[in-house]
Image 1: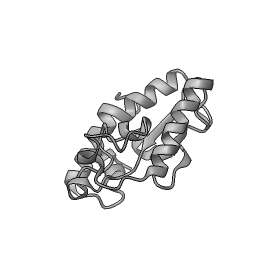
Image 2: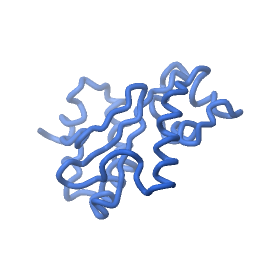
Image 3: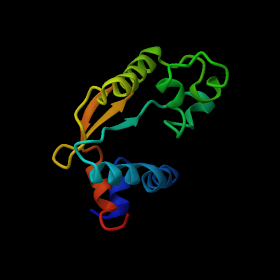
Image 4: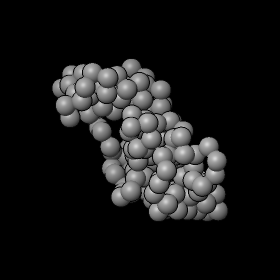
Length: 144
């Protein structure tokens, strides 16, 4: 599978492919490389909740998770990113994981290692995923 095919696999538009490639280049791949270098001592997560704000065009944009991490969704300034009714249960789960990590050094899921690549995906239905999007991750092998 070519690099482009890995990003087009789900029928994404050209704009969506560009957004995913840029997300991987700037955020996901560097985070994965850091976790690989510190496997067993790192915990990976992805924020996957798509905001309904701006007609849904923001998706799960960079910075959107901050109100969820600190459970401050009712604070002024959150609504432009989250919309008017962000899921409080997601904020409670994400905030709880960060508090657990601050207290114990463990957020509540397995550490990242090359065998499982455990990654918590925070969304309305949060779940632990092993090696999310491996075909896209492998596109970057030897590149970044």
